[in-house]
Image (tube, rainbow, N blue to C red):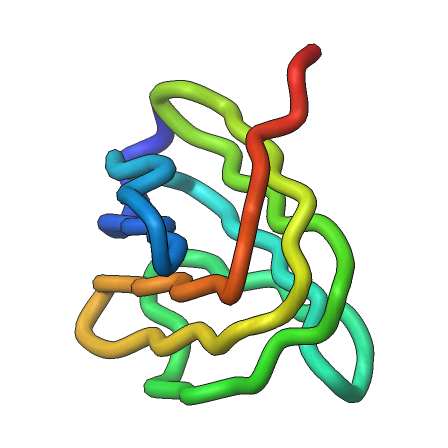
Length: 88
C-alpha cells in the first residue's frame, strides 16, 4: 500500500457501500471523469450516471445513478442517489 492514501466513504441513500483508505478514486463527474489522489485540492462535484472506482487496501467499483462527491483534507465522501457494487 502506498504511503500517500486518503480516507474514502461511499454511501447511498439506502446504506453505506464502502469505507477505507485509497491511493486513488475515480468518479464520473458531470463534465467528464475525474481522478483524485492524496493531497488533492478541496473540491465539491456533481456526479453523473457511471462508475466509481476506488483503488486501495481493497479495490472496489460501483455502478451509480448520480450524486455528489466532496474532497477536503484527505477525506473524500461519495454520496450516490443509488449504487450497486460491481463484482469482479
